[in-house]
Length: 271
Length: 271
Image (tube, rainbow over all chains, first blue to last red; front, side, top):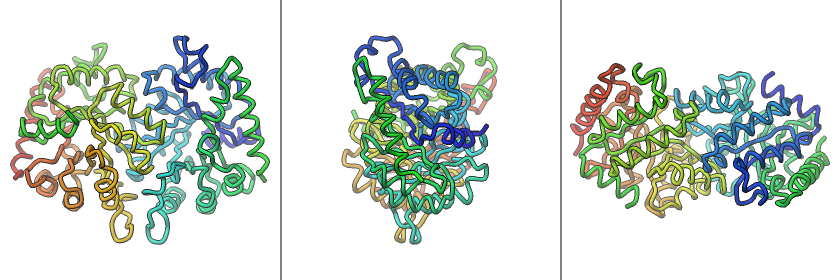
């Protein structure tokens, strides 16, 4: 089963477009986990147990593990999801991008080492830099297109022949890079107008949508702008809003409550 | 001493613009090292010992370590250089790029965990994504501008208001992002015309130049196009050409020979 098939099945089975981002920082996880020998793994595992039936995907962000010399805890987190909840796709958020043999090593990192189902990739170096990821037909390549941060427009909005760069890129990905039908785009929740244009350009391509919750994206606007005709097509990511909903002994219950609220809020605006 | 000061001093002391890239792959390192418990560290250490007086910098590429679950060997490689050859700047080639707290974790990965002096960064997400790196005033932020791969132009050459995107970006970095005077650019050796324009735009900013050796960049053309008025300003990277010059027991001698040849070839065209 490919990443896209797994994702489509998951949308169908759970009726949820919520993706939970696993961005664990030692400062913010509950005090009673801090003393554990593998605190961020224990935290992620608990969040997964608390939310597994509510999500279409999990998205661990590698920087939070790498910054703490904790790649082993990232591996255990992904293994835990894969073994216990095998229907849930795991997206490794690492935004890699390099050329030739180096890009092949990054693809090996994401897909062979960590066994992720999909990975985020930065397209600035061009199609050949994405090719080692695109060649993994059963895996997902989720390309940065229009990101959610305030400075996103510095490059992405520059006018190229009457189109903003991110639209031009979306057209290239749709028409040229997506020969294995395994591409998705990162489209920030903070930009619903841009998302509507990208939905027109890309047809049914899935979007990974960061920026709700802590980043403040408007759920109604983004769902109306980004959903496909079948009411699916979006992996709407919330990280901090869900995983840090509580920081006491009841943090799992709090995370679950916010995950339910977010899923239901999203569903309110779906076709 | 900042990264830029360290680099300028190194150019002065060694009279070398050669940067050696450490891209170790198990398949290509000498057979007698394969059985070692830390083969890629042993290989990198030997290459460093064989070339340390010939280089202005080393550039380990993180993907080659991460793809093999060998972050510990990367750490040992960087530590080895820092302790034994403290005047040599170490550039972590990881091409990171993300937002806010995630970018801070990537900066922590490069500068606090690995103790690199500089890191390569992908600018696609805009200035705020680079800011956590730029804020480390004593460290170097080396931004992808015009890369050496055949597909580099897919995005980087797009015309934005009469300029190619990479020139527009170089202007933004020079005039807006470089407030701590710690920026450098990645400019591929395979594009001397573009490099000449970038030298005009950026003044004395250092360029990291991949693409000589295995990638076939023309040394004469790139040195003439990219050097500053003082004949410095370039970190001309060769990875495979140097480190895989031999693969028998004499691999260190072979690497040294090619490093000397490359340094001297470069110097032939300097002011």
